[in-house]
Image (spheres, rainbow, N blue to C red):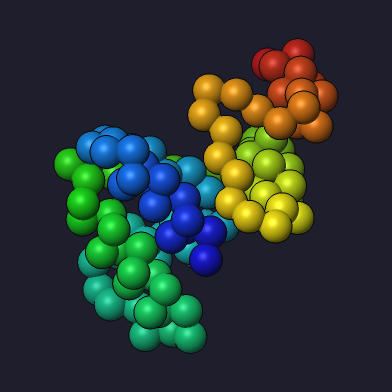
Amino acid sequence: MAAVKALQFPVDMGFRRIILEGDCSSVMGRLSAYEADLSAVGMILEEAKNMIGLFVSCVFSHTLREGNRAAHATAQLGVSQRSDVIWVEDYHASILSIIIDVNSAS
């Protein structure tokens, strides 16, 4: 699940305070809930919740997909890769037009 991957990077980098943003409100809500998730994906969500416990602070933020276009396009690009790819303080060239569109609309 994307949430586990999204959490693994800041764990590996030693970040202590994070903001986890996503466009799926049900996942964001389930991750921030205290009770155990007994759904079909509950085990994956519980793995993510265990990782959340490694941070001093973890803020959950839901965003609409339209407001998250660059992140969504990056995720789609990542799915097409044969191995994990992480850009830090940079972005893939194919995302540039989306970043420009988002910044010009602001």
